[in-house]
Length: 402
Ligand SMILES: [Cu+2]
Image 1 (cartoon, rainbow, N blue to C red):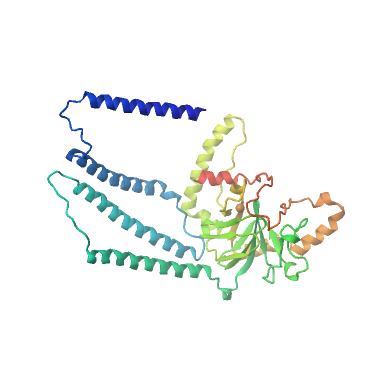
Image 2: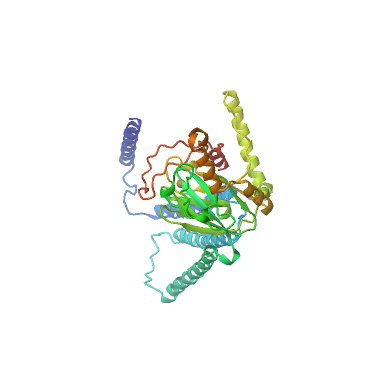
């Protein structure tokens, strides 16, 4: 109703303005220029406006780089990330360079050669030489960019099996992640959505001996400097595994396995110590402290102070709690990683423990397994009522960082 009223008021205002302009026109003396053909004065005004527009564009571009430059991601924390950033930088620098020159010239010429009564436009049909030059230069530059991009792409995407990467499965479901380490044999056991039952929430095939030493966890630990090959599976709908700090992203598609590999190069501790991250954490915590004062005044619980951690995020809008679909990643030294992995129970021991507890189902509750919807009828049918997880206010952290 309010919108309707606002529209009526705006329409009435427009009619009023139009009527007032009519009155002004009628009250003008008869020798005023009422012709609809642009005269020198109009042309001059439009020339100046063209120039003013391009200056406005440049000023706002510089302001955006200045003001929002701090939202750039820090140094890439993976081996291929540097290459990726270089490609991105070259593309942006080229685009900026060309756009600054062409837009500047375009608007400057519109100002310089504005219409004048005494001047007549030159009829200039074509110039083969000029057309050749402005065709061949973009062809060469674009071909160079594309070839460079293809090489970078194949470098990043072709996982070198000779490096003996550690195989980890990342399993996506509405709305969380699980990681499955392939164990001593570095081979994941077969899995299928049809095997999902009870604690076997990833549907690992119990008859496949490769799966016995697999370890399923809720937090992804990675040893620094060791190549990792991720295999992605989805239980329900299309998800996307997004590792911003490692410059990696891969679709997670129900019914198929996608893969991507990278080598982490900066540990969580090292990233926390970096100047970029110290500044960021400081500014997030300053904001939190301010908000805490307001929360305290209202007698509400306050926010914990923020500490940086790598995250795996879902980058496909996959349902109502998509925003909170994330998994903590810890990059650490090989010794710390091995010690941590040692403590995690294997799939076989989990299943054995479960079968012992079968008579006392209330003891096996533990973590609630995700609802198995079946991979086939997944696409978009997201009707399951799932409450957003209590994830230590992590979504809030992400929001505050921006
Ligand atoms: Cu998702």
